[in-house]
Image (cartoon, rainbow, N blue to C red):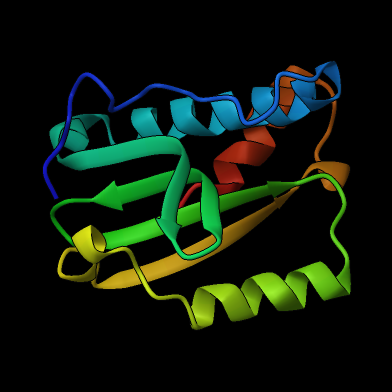
Length: 134
């Protein structure tokens, strides 16, 4: 997958509504922590937000390692129900990747970030986000 350096770390907001402020803060912190964790291999990383990767799936954060060909989608959710969890799991398991990703991505996994269990204090939030980054 070719890295477009001008688009590599842009953070897109799905919804500018003020109720999404915490969601966007968490999204920004995760992108920053991924960027920091992979700072020595940053030229081989693609990190994008609000990325459509397959039919009906738009990742909150899409992290692709160009060396290992592994991709991780971070799903940030405010209200997680068993129904949503089941549907999302099925979507990822049965997803047909977009044509441009089929040959590029070897392994695709997803990580749920539940906003309800994250602390509202920014320092504690940063430490907890460090535990989420793969």
